[in-house]
Image 1 (cartoon, rainbow, N blue to C red):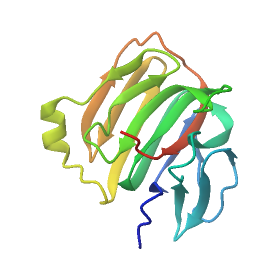
Image 2: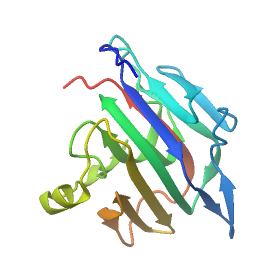
Image 3: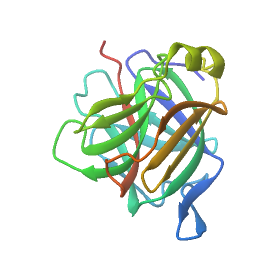
Image 4: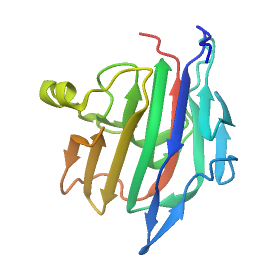
Length: 189
């Protein structure tokens, strides 16, 4: 795939589902964006069975792809690949009027080694950054397909990158329900 410099390109491929009331509900059908709504600021499409998000550098808004349903307890397994820029998988998010478009938890997914960290936009900011040991063990490489697993059950959260725990919270006082979203913004660091 040719990479165009002014865009962030993120590919997400779902391998599992969201958990709700003792049953699994598919979040992505591999063919369409049914069940998802874009928030202005990015471009989203399905390409080769994956969700592709792009966002030009000139765009100040974050590109958000928002689930049409809200979820509480979730288990999500995703394969993603980031070529450049900054992205994330938001969960337990609420819509707001801002450049981002939502407030909530975000599993950091970007071209840096912060991938797998937990950030709360519109709240505490960094809740948990991966430590040096987690960064070394998880073998994350930008541009390569990477496994992400998120479990958010009641007030406990575990985030794994390539099957290794990068972030974990127990008895967290934060949000317990909300939308799930993809985010793509151009890295303006």
